[in-house]
Image (cartoon, rainbow, N blue to C red; front, side, top):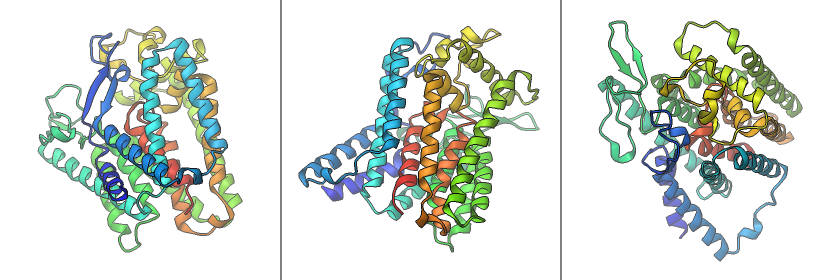
Length: 415
Protein backbone atom coordinates (compact mmCIF):
# COMPACT_ATOMS: atom_id res chain seq x y z
CA UNK A 1 0.00 0.00 0.00
CA UNK A 2 2.79 2.45 0.91
CA UNK A 3 4.53 2.00 -2.45
CA UNK A 4 1.25 2.56 -4.33
CA UNK A 5 0.49 5.74 -2.38
CA UNK A 6 3.99 7.08 -2.99
CA UNK A 7 3.78 6.35 -6.73
CA UNK A 8 0.36 7.99 -7.08
CA UNK A 9 1.55 11.00 -5.07
CA UNK A 10 4.51 11.51 -7.41
CA UNK A 11 2.18 11.28 -10.41
CA UNK A 12 -0.08 13.91 -8.84
CA UNK A 13 2.82 16.29 -8.18
CA UNK A 14 3.70 16.10 -11.87
CA UNK A 15 0.18 16.15 -13.32
CA UNK A 16 -1.93 18.43 -11.13
CA UNK A 17 -1.50 21.27 -13.68
CA UNK A 18 -3.28 19.12 -16.30
CA UNK A 19 -6.60 20.92 -16.79
CA UNK A 20 -8.78 18.01 -17.90
CA UNK A 21 -12.14 19.01 -16.46
CA UNK A 22 -15.88 18.44 -16.57
CA UNK A 23 -18.76 20.83 -15.90
CA UNK A 24 -20.96 19.68 -13.03
CA UNK A 25 -22.92 22.85 -12.22
CA UNK A 26 -23.81 25.87 -14.37
CA UNK A 27 -26.93 27.48 -12.94
CA UNK A 28 -25.97 31.02 -14.04
CA UNK A 29 -23.07 30.43 -16.45
CA UNK A 30 -24.75 32.01 -19.49
CA UNK A 31 -26.60 34.81 -17.73
CA UNK A 32 -24.56 37.53 -19.46
CA UNK A 33 -24.45 36.10 -23.00
CA UNK A 34 -20.96 34.63 -22.66
CA UNK A 35 -19.97 31.56 -20.69
CA UNK A 36 -18.99 32.62 -17.18
CA UNK A 37 -16.48 30.18 -15.61
CA UNK A 38 -16.50 32.06 -12.30
CA UNK A 39 -20.02 30.82 -11.45
CA UNK A 40 -19.55 27.31 -12.85
CA UNK A 41 -18.81 24.17 -10.86
CA UNK A 42 -15.96 22.12 -12.38
CA UNK A 43 -14.43 18.76 -11.56
CA UNK A 44 -10.77 18.44 -12.59
CA UNK A 45 -9.36 14.98 -13.25
CA UNK A 46 -6.31 15.52 -10.96
CA UNK A 47 -8.79 16.16 -8.14
CA UNK A 48 -10.01 12.57 -8.46
CA UNK A 49 -6.42 11.33 -8.19
CA UNK A 50 -5.79 13.48 -5.11
CA UNK A 51 -8.94 12.24 -3.37
CA UNK A 52 -7.91 8.64 -4.13
CA UNK A 53 -4.40 9.22 -2.73
CA UNK A 54 -5.70 10.79 0.46
CA UNK A 55 -8.30 8.04 0.96
CA UNK A 56 -5.64 5.33 0.58
CA UNK A 57 -3.31 7.17 2.97
CA UNK A 58 -6.12 7.62 5.52
CA UNK A 59 -7.03 3.92 5.37
CA UNK A 60 -3.39 2.99 5.83
CA UNK A 61 -3.07 5.31 8.84
CA UNK A 62 -6.13 3.71 10.45
CA UNK A 63 -4.75 0.22 9.88
CA UNK A 64 -1.38 1.10 11.39
CA UNK A 65 -2.99 3.17 14.17
CA UNK A 66 -0.86 6.18 13.28
CA UNK A 67 -3.67 8.77 13.29
CA UNK A 68 -3.46 9.14 17.04
CA UNK A 69 0.10 10.47 16.68
CA UNK A 70 -0.99 13.49 14.63
CA UNK A 71 -0.47 16.82 16.33
CA UNK A 72 -3.47 18.59 17.84
CA UNK A 73 -4.71 21.57 15.78
CA UNK A 74 -3.53 24.97 16.96
CA UNK A 75 -4.70 28.55 16.73
CA UNK A 76 -3.94 28.73 13.01
CA UNK A 77 -6.50 26.05 12.17
CA UNK A 78 -9.03 27.62 14.54
CA UNK A 79 -8.70 30.97 12.79
CA UNK A 80 -9.01 29.32 9.39
CA UNK A 81 -12.14 27.42 10.42
CA UNK A 82 -13.66 30.73 11.55
CA UNK A 83 -12.77 32.20 8.16
CA UNK A 84 -14.45 29.31 6.32
CA UNK A 85 -17.50 29.40 8.63
CA UNK A 86 -17.93 33.10 7.94
CA UNK A 87 -17.61 32.55 4.17
CA UNK A 88 -20.22 29.79 4.35
CA UNK A 89 -22.69 31.84 6.38
CA UNK A 90 -22.38 34.88 4.12
CA UNK A 91 -22.90 32.70 1.03
CA UNK A 92 -25.86 30.90 2.59
CA UNK A 93 -27.74 34.17 3.10
CA UNK A 94 -26.43 36.21 0.16
CA UNK A 95 -25.12 33.91 -2.59
CA UNK A 96 -25.21 30.46 -4.16
CA UNK A 97 -24.46 27.79 -1.55
CA UNK A 98 -23.69 25.22 -4.27
CA UNK A 99 -20.79 27.36 -5.48
CA UNK A 100 -19.58 27.60 -1.89
CA UNK A 101 -19.61 23.80 -1.67
CA UNK A 102 -17.37 23.61 -4.75
CA UNK A 103 -15.06 26.13 -3.07
CA UNK A 104 -15.15 24.09 0.14
CA UNK A 105 -14.08 20.98 -1.79
CA UNK A 106 -11.09 22.93 -3.17
CA UNK A 107 -10.13 23.97 0.35
CA UNK A 108 -10.41 20.40 1.64
CA UNK A 109 -8.20 19.26 -1.24
CA UNK A 110 -5.65 21.91 -0.27
CA UNK A 111 -5.86 20.52 3.26
CA UNK A 112 -5.19 17.03 1.91
CA UNK A 113 -2.07 18.31 0.11
CA UNK A 114 -0.97 20.01 3.33
CA UNK A 115 -1.37 16.81 5.35
CA UNK A 116 0.37 14.59 2.78
CA UNK A 117 3.36 16.93 2.69
CA UNK A 118 3.55 17.32 6.45
CA UNK A 119 3.31 13.55 6.94
CA UNK A 120 6.21 13.01 4.50
CA UNK A 121 4.51 10.49 2.24
CA UNK A 122 7.71 10.79 0.25
CA UNK A 123 10.96 12.47 1.41
CA UNK A 124 10.76 16.22 0.98
CA UNK A 125 13.68 16.45 -1.45
CA UNK A 126 11.96 13.88 -3.63
CA UNK A 127 8.74 15.90 -3.51
CA UNK A 128 10.67 18.97 -4.68
CA UNK A 129 12.24 16.90 -7.46
CA UNK A 130 8.83 15.88 -8.84
CA UNK A 131 7.53 19.44 -8.64
CA UNK A 132 10.54 20.56 -10.68
CA UNK A 133 9.94 17.77 -13.22
CA UNK A 134 6.41 19.09 -13.68
CA UNK A 135 7.66 22.67 -14.03
CA UNK A 136 10.22 21.68 -16.68
CA UNK A 137 7.49 19.91 -18.64
CA UNK A 138 5.28 23.01 -18.52
CA UNK A 139 8.16 25.26 -19.62
CA UNK A 140 8.87 22.95 -22.57
CA UNK A 141 5.19 23.09 -23.61
CA UNK A 142 5.16 26.87 -23.20
CA UNK A 143 8.24 27.26 -25.40
CA UNK A 144 6.80 25.06 -28.16
CA UNK A 145 3.44 26.84 -28.03
CA UNK A 146 5.21 30.18 -28.38
CA UNK A 147 7.38 28.99 -31.27
CA UNK A 148 4.46 27.43 -33.16
CA UNK A 149 2.02 30.18 -32.13
CA UNK A 150 -0.72 27.65 -31.45
CA UNK A 151 -1.53 24.69 -29.23
CA UNK A 152 0.22 21.34 -29.67
CA UNK A 153 -2.91 19.19 -29.81
CA UNK A 154 -2.37 17.69 -26.35
CA UNK A 155 -6.02 18.07 -25.38
CA UNK A 156 -5.96 14.66 -23.69
CA UNK A 157 -3.91 16.20 -20.84
CA UNK A 158 -5.91 19.41 -20.69
CA UNK A 159 -4.06 21.69 -23.09
CA UNK A 160 -6.56 24.35 -24.20
CA UNK A 161 -7.12 25.19 -27.86
CA UNK A 162 -5.09 28.35 -28.43
CA UNK A 163 -4.06 30.28 -31.52
CA UNK A 164 -3.75 33.86 -32.82
CA UNK A 165 -7.23 33.71 -34.34
CA UNK A 166 -8.98 31.92 -31.45
CA UNK A 167 -11.31 34.18 -29.48
CA UNK A 168 -10.67 34.89 -25.77
CA UNK A 169 -7.06 33.66 -25.97
CA UNK A 170 -4.39 35.87 -24.34
CA UNK A 171 -2.27 37.41 -27.10
CA UNK A 172 0.39 40.06 -27.63
CA UNK A 173 0.07 42.55 -30.51
CA UNK A 174 3.37 42.76 -32.38
CA UNK A 175 4.68 45.82 -34.22
CA UNK A 176 3.98 44.30 -37.65
CA UNK A 177 0.30 43.90 -36.78
CA UNK A 178 0.38 40.15 -36.17
CA UNK A 179 -0.71 38.51 -32.93
CA UNK A 180 1.46 36.22 -30.84
CA UNK A 181 -0.19 33.97 -28.29
CA UNK A 182 0.92 33.80 -24.69
CA UNK A 183 1.66 30.18 -23.76
CA UNK A 184 -0.78 28.26 -21.57
CA UNK A 185 1.04 24.98 -20.99
CA UNK A 186 -1.79 22.77 -19.76
CA UNK A 187 -3.34 25.56 -17.69
CA UNK A 188 -6.49 27.53 -18.41
CA UNK A 189 -4.62 30.87 -18.54
CA UNK A 190 -0.98 32.02 -18.89
CA UNK A 191 -1.19 33.92 -15.59
CA UNK A 192 -1.91 30.68 -13.74
CA UNK A 193 1.08 29.08 -15.46
CA UNK A 194 3.25 32.02 -14.42
CA UNK A 195 2.21 31.84 -10.75
CA UNK A 196 2.62 28.05 -10.75
CA UNK A 197 6.22 28.32 -12.04
CA UNK A 198 7.00 31.13 -9.59
CA UNK A 199 5.61 29.14 -6.64
CA UNK A 200 7.45 25.94 -7.57
CA UNK A 201 10.66 27.93 -7.96
CA UNK A 202 10.43 29.47 -4.47
CA UNK A 203 9.34 26.15 -2.94
CA UNK A 204 12.46 24.55 -4.45
CA UNK A 205 14.98 27.32 -3.83
CA UNK A 206 16.06 26.16 -0.38
CA UNK A 207 16.72 22.61 -1.60
CA UNK A 208 18.57 23.15 -4.89
CA UNK A 209 22.30 22.42 -4.72
CA UNK A 210 24.53 25.45 -5.13
CA UNK A 211 26.16 24.02 -8.26
CA UNK A 212 22.75 23.65 -9.93
CA UNK A 213 21.30 26.93 -8.66
CA UNK A 214 22.31 29.14 -11.65
CA UNK A 215 20.72 26.65 -14.07
CA UNK A 216 17.41 26.58 -12.21
CA UNK A 217 17.31 30.35 -11.71
CA UNK A 218 17.79 30.91 -15.45
CA UNK A 219 15.36 28.18 -16.52
CA UNK A 220 12.54 29.20 -14.17
CA UNK A 221 13.02 32.90 -14.88
CA UNK A 222 12.85 32.25 -18.63
CA UNK A 223 9.72 30.14 -18.10
CA UNK A 224 8.02 32.90 -16.12
CA UNK A 225 9.05 35.45 -18.76
CA UNK A 226 7.56 33.29 -21.52
CA UNK A 227 4.14 33.31 -19.85
CA UNK A 228 3.94 37.09 -20.09
CA UNK A 229 2.49 37.21 -16.58
CA UNK A 230 3.49 40.62 -15.28
CA UNK A 231 2.13 39.67 -11.85
CA UNK A 232 4.50 36.68 -11.59
CA UNK A 233 7.42 38.68 -12.99
CA UNK A 234 6.92 41.59 -10.59
CA UNK A 235 6.46 39.23 -7.65
CA UNK A 236 9.71 37.45 -8.54
CA UNK A 237 11.58 40.76 -8.29
CA UNK A 238 9.88 41.87 -5.07
CA UNK A 239 10.46 38.56 -3.27
CA UNK A 240 14.10 38.51 -4.39
CA UNK A 241 14.39 41.92 -2.71
CA UNK A 242 12.83 40.52 0.47
CA UNK A 243 15.40 37.70 0.49
CA UNK A 244 18.17 40.27 0.13
CA UNK A 245 16.79 42.24 3.10
CA UNK A 246 16.51 39.09 5.22
CA UNK A 247 20.10 38.14 4.42
CA UNK A 248 21.34 41.16 6.39
CA UNK A 249 19.53 40.08 9.56
CA UNK A 250 20.93 37.56 12.02
CA UNK A 251 18.36 37.52 14.84
CA UNK A 252 14.95 35.87 14.58
CA UNK A 253 13.11 38.79 16.22
CA UNK A 254 14.49 41.17 13.58
CA UNK A 255 13.22 39.00 10.77
CA UNK A 256 9.85 38.66 12.50
CA UNK A 257 9.53 42.43 12.76
CA UNK A 258 10.61 42.84 9.13
CA UNK A 259 8.11 40.21 7.95
CA UNK A 260 5.18 41.77 9.79
CA UNK A 261 6.34 45.24 8.72
CA UNK A 262 6.36 44.18 5.06
CA UNK A 263 2.89 42.71 5.50
CA UNK A 264 1.59 45.94 7.03
CA UNK A 265 3.20 48.14 4.39
CA UNK A 266 1.90 45.89 1.65
CA UNK A 267 -1.70 46.08 2.85
CA UNK A 268 -1.39 49.84 3.31
CA UNK A 269 -0.31 50.11 -0.33
CA UNK A 270 -3.31 48.02 -1.37
CA UNK A 271 -5.65 50.32 0.57
CA UNK A 272 -4.19 53.42 -1.09
CA UNK A 273 -4.67 51.95 -4.58
CA UNK A 274 -8.16 50.71 -3.65
CA UNK A 275 -9.39 54.10 -2.47
CA UNK A 276 -7.84 56.02 -5.37
CA UNK A 277 -8.43 53.71 -8.36
CA UNK A 278 -11.04 56.07 -9.85
CA UNK A 279 -8.53 58.94 -10.04
CA UNK A 280 -5.45 57.02 -11.23
CA UNK A 281 -4.69 57.77 -14.89
CA UNK A 282 -3.18 54.90 -16.89
CA UNK A 283 -2.91 54.44 -20.65
CA UNK A 284 -2.45 50.67 -20.62
CA UNK A 285 -5.88 49.14 -21.42
CA UNK A 286 -5.28 46.10 -19.21
CA UNK A 287 -4.28 48.20 -16.19
CA UNK A 288 -7.17 50.61 -16.80
CA UNK A 289 -9.62 47.70 -16.87
CA UNK A 290 -8.31 46.45 -13.54
CA UNK A 291 -8.58 49.90 -12.00
CA UNK A 292 -12.22 50.05 -13.09
CA UNK A 293 -12.76 46.64 -11.48
CA UNK A 294 -11.36 48.14 -8.28
CA UNK A 295 -13.92 50.95 -8.50
CA UNK A 296 -16.74 48.41 -8.85
CA UNK A 297 -15.27 46.45 -5.94
CA UNK A 298 -15.14 49.56 -3.74
CA UNK A 299 -18.72 50.50 -4.60
CA UNK A 300 -19.80 46.94 -3.81
CA UNK A 301 -18.03 47.04 -0.45
CA UNK A 302 -19.61 50.37 0.52
CA UNK A 303 -23.09 48.92 -0.09
CA UNK A 304 -22.47 45.28 0.92
CA UNK A 305 -19.71 45.47 3.55
CA UNK A 306 -20.70 42.12 5.11
CA UNK A 307 -20.10 40.32 1.80
CA UNK A 308 -22.08 39.03 -1.18
CA UNK A 309 -21.10 35.35 -0.97
CA UNK A 310 -18.33 33.16 -2.39
CA UNK A 311 -18.23 33.21 -6.23
CA UNK A 312 -21.01 35.81 -6.32
CA UNK A 313 -18.92 38.85 -7.37
CA UNK A 314 -19.63 38.63 -11.12
CA UNK A 315 -23.34 38.01 -10.51
CA UNK A 316 -23.81 41.34 -8.72
CA UNK A 317 -21.03 43.53 -10.15
CA UNK A 318 -23.30 45.17 -12.76
CA UNK A 319 -25.28 46.74 -9.90
CA UNK A 320 -22.19 48.70 -8.86
CA UNK A 321 -20.74 49.63 -12.27
CA UNK A 322 -21.06 53.20 -13.54
CA UNK A 323 -21.11 51.97 -17.16
CA UNK A 324 -22.81 49.08 -18.92
CA UNK A 325 -20.54 46.05 -18.91
CA UNK A 326 -19.85 43.98 -22.00
CA UNK A 327 -20.24 40.19 -21.62
CA UNK A 328 -16.49 39.50 -21.40
CA UNK A 329 -16.05 42.23 -18.75
CA UNK A 330 -17.87 40.17 -16.12
CA UNK A 331 -14.71 39.07 -14.32
CA UNK A 332 -13.70 39.02 -10.67
CA UNK A 333 -11.66 41.99 -9.49
CA UNK A 334 -8.01 41.17 -10.16
CA UNK A 335 -6.95 41.38 -6.53
CA UNK A 336 -7.51 38.45 -4.19
CA UNK A 337 -7.80 40.69 -1.11
CA UNK A 338 -10.42 42.93 -2.68
CA UNK A 339 -12.33 39.88 -3.92
CA UNK A 340 -12.29 38.26 -0.47
CA UNK A 341 -13.44 41.58 1.01
CA UNK A 342 -16.40 41.64 -1.36
CA UNK A 343 -17.35 37.98 -1.14
CA UNK A 344 -16.74 37.25 2.57
CA UNK A 345 -17.10 40.76 4.00
CA UNK A 346 -14.82 42.99 6.06
CA UNK A 347 -14.83 40.34 8.79
CA UNK A 348 -13.51 37.74 6.31
CA UNK A 349 -10.63 39.95 5.19
CA UNK A 350 -9.69 40.77 8.78
CA UNK A 351 -9.55 37.06 9.62
CA UNK A 352 -7.37 36.42 6.55
CA UNK A 353 -4.92 39.16 7.54
CA UNK A 354 -4.70 37.73 11.07
CA UNK A 355 -4.03 34.25 9.64
CA UNK A 356 -1.22 35.55 7.40
CA UNK A 357 0.27 37.53 10.29
CA UNK A 358 0.07 34.42 12.48
CA UNK A 359 1.99 32.37 9.89
CA UNK A 360 4.71 35.01 9.48
CA UNK A 361 5.05 35.59 13.22
CA UNK A 362 5.20 31.89 14.02
CA UNK A 363 7.78 31.03 11.37
CA UNK A 364 10.80 32.75 12.85
CA UNK A 365 12.14 30.75 15.75
CA UNK A 366 15.52 30.80 17.44
CA UNK A 367 16.77 27.82 15.45
CA UNK A 368 16.03 29.57 12.18
CA UNK A 369 18.19 32.62 12.76
CA UNK A 370 21.32 32.02 10.72
CA UNK A 371 20.72 29.61 7.85
CA UNK A 372 20.08 30.91 4.32
CA UNK A 373 17.97 27.80 3.73
CA UNK A 374 15.59 28.84 6.51
CA UNK A 375 15.33 32.34 5.09
CA UNK A 376 14.48 30.92 1.66
CA UNK A 377 11.75 28.64 3.04
CA UNK A 378 9.55 31.64 3.93
CA UNK A 379 9.78 33.06 0.40
CA UNK A 380 6.89 31.01 -1.11
CA UNK A 381 4.53 32.53 1.47
CA UNK A 382 5.75 36.04 0.66
CA UNK A 383 5.32 35.24 -3.05
CA UNK A 384 1.64 34.32 -2.61
CA UNK A 385 1.05 37.37 -0.40
CA UNK A 386 2.45 39.62 -3.11
CA UNK A 387 0.93 37.99 -6.19
CA UNK A 388 -2.53 38.01 -4.57
CA UNK A 389 -2.52 41.78 -5.10
CA UNK A 390 -2.35 41.39 -8.87
CA UNK A 391 -4.75 38.54 -9.64
CA UNK A 392 -7.68 36.55 -8.27
CA UNK A 393 -6.52 33.07 -9.29
CA UNK A 394 -5.51 32.00 -5.77
CA UNK A 395 -9.20 32.32 -4.87
CA UNK A 396 -10.97 31.39 -8.09
CA UNK A 397 -8.90 28.63 -9.74
CA UNK A 398 -8.55 25.04 -8.54
CA UNK A 399 -4.77 25.40 -8.75
CA UNK A 400 -4.72 28.34 -6.33
CA UNK A 401 -5.74 26.45 -3.16
CA UNK A 402 -3.41 23.56 -4.08
CA UNK A 403 -0.44 25.94 -4.31
CA UNK A 404 -1.53 27.59 -1.05
CA UNK A 405 -1.68 24.19 0.65
CA UNK A 406 1.85 23.40 -0.51
CA UNK A 407 3.17 26.78 0.65
CA UNK A 408 1.56 26.61 4.11
CA UNK A 409 2.91 23.07 4.53
CA UNK A 410 6.41 24.30 3.65
CA UNK A 411 6.12 27.30 5.97
CA UNK A 412 4.84 25.38 9.01
CA UNK A 413 6.71 22.08 8.77
CA UNK A 414 9.89 21.38 10.73
CA UNK A 415 13.07 21.82 8.69
